[in-house]
Length: 161
Image (cartoon, rainbow, N blue to C red; front, side):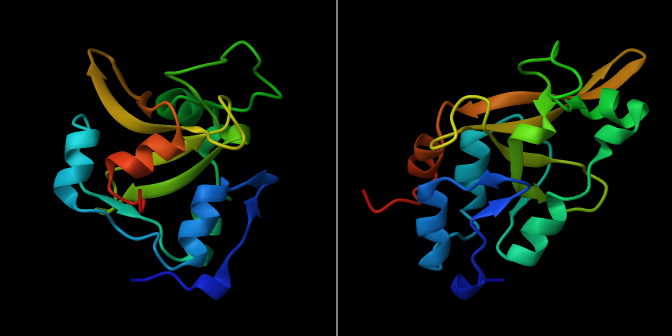
C-alpha cells in the first residue's frame, strides 16, 4: 500500500517529522523495506513489521496510548516525561517524545519501531520493541536500533546516497 504524497502531515502531537522522513514521504519513497534488511538491522524483532505508509494510519497509531493505564504502561515500558521525569531513557519510551513509524503486521504481536526524539528533534534515534519473558515479568523493552534516523535510512537502503 503506497503512501499518498499529497497526504503529508508534518507533525503529530506537536512533534515534527525529521526532514529526511518528510522528503521520502513527499516523494512517495517511504515504503516497506525488504524483510531480510529489516531482520539484519533488528535481529531481536520477534515478528514481521509493517512500515506505516498511510498518513491516516500514522496519525491513528500515534494518537492512542496505553500509557494512561498503569498496568499497560509498566508492561509496555512507556511513560509520559511530563509526569514521570525519573524514567529518562531506554528501556523506557517517552510517548510525549516519540512517534511510531512501523508496527506489527500480525495482530496481537504488539511490535513497533519508533522515532525517539529525546536524542534529537532533527535526526532522532530509532528504537524498536523487544518482548522480554522474565519469570513473573513479561514486558517490553525499547532497544536502540540506530543512533540517528539518517543511519536507519542508510542501513535499510532508503537513501539515494
